[in-house]
Length: 342
Length: 253
Image (cartoon, rainbow over all chains, first blue to last red; front, side, top):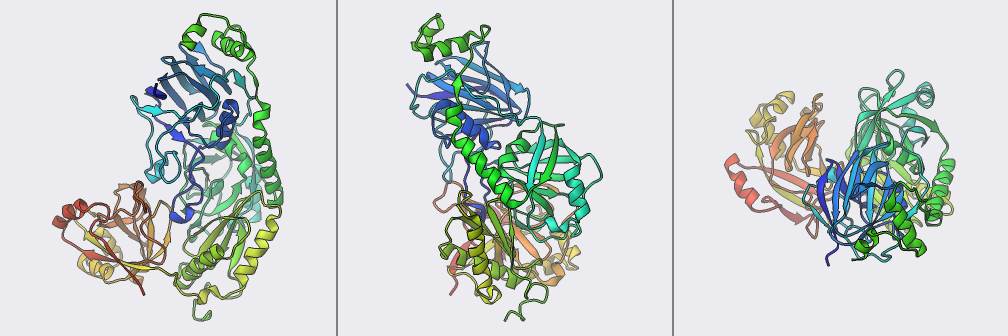
């Protein structure tokens, strides 16, 4: 039996993503990978498997999928309306997806990027050491209806019905920033204003970066627009020609010539990537040692995520989840089970 | 030698080292584009790769600076910063020679016409006839100053001072892979199809990024490139030659 997930319908921005291709900036290729890397770790914790396995990233809208074999799935990132053969599925949780079952994932109810993980990960071909689509570099492409995605061997078949507490990062909020090589191009009053005012996430944004609209006046650097291009990294905040910030994300270009007022720390970048259009973001400058401490703390938290996984609480209204929960506890009930074990 | 570099960039204030994010450093050798600063950045990157810096994960260069990313789980990132600072201050990087293993590429290119529609306007901006513009580009041995923006995509320089022309204010919607574009005395040979503000003056069948190939990234910083003009009706035959597009390379001594 070949392990596959069949794509019946898909939103326009659904791609295979993993941890990307670190180490190739010198070749002009940014790391890429999941826009919200934390969601990959959450999916791996829910399924009890390595975080480097590939998942589907769904920008704004999911699609309809059919299991070509008995699969396990987990849903993380921006919560979306998900149903399995018509029954609602809990988000931030793992579920059984029996062979032939239809999984339908609608629009994001908050945030921007939802993730669909499978037990064993998607086993699509590697290019330059990763499976991630890197659209800006011409590697891979968004999914299309009719695609059949190979799924790797699952080390823990049957382990489903688990959940993680939601880690809210979908509605904007406060984001911490460290100063960088060009922060000095902005006068003290501009950087103070940058830290004091709010910014609304523009509708324009993609895996390369998100545009923010200042509540106040546009921002200006003393260097104007005549800056020599330098290496740029995800989290960098460019101030573009019209004075609005553009925060670079996973699939950013590798060099840039717009002045950069600072860099969002890694721990807070998922909050920027996930902010839905209209969400308000605020920036706070912290010193570099503080930033390193916060990032290290976040890495330790992520490493311990598997210990934070809990059995999914039963909601009598969602039979499917009830079934999953009972499978874990060794109790069998309901005729769905027969089909699942077939 | 350092005095001979350039007044703008050489001197006591360079190189400058600044953090870039919580796990990176940018070592800058100048704030304007010049040959010596570019050479310094390339040499520094090569030295950093060979210096056995504990925790070094990745290096890159841009036009006049080098980027170093380190392991964020280092016990003492300040030790890494100190080691990089010692390396940066330990040598006159502006006096370094170009990297080893450089090659001279000759890449056939169709200038102007339907394949490269902005030759005439770019030539006019440079105060040249289209014919003189092609001659000027074809007679210049360009150097890959950096690979950046997109995979394997070279920034080539420098053209003569007449080519100090600005980028367009409006972006061209999409230029094709293999497009040779010009602005500010530099040329970019595009490896992806993308919007751009650079003017499209030539079209090659050369693919600088070949995702499925054993060696997907073709050009390296320090390589030199000559664009040989060919007539438009030769283009189909170049495309038929595959991703090399008729290009040849030989080692530079």
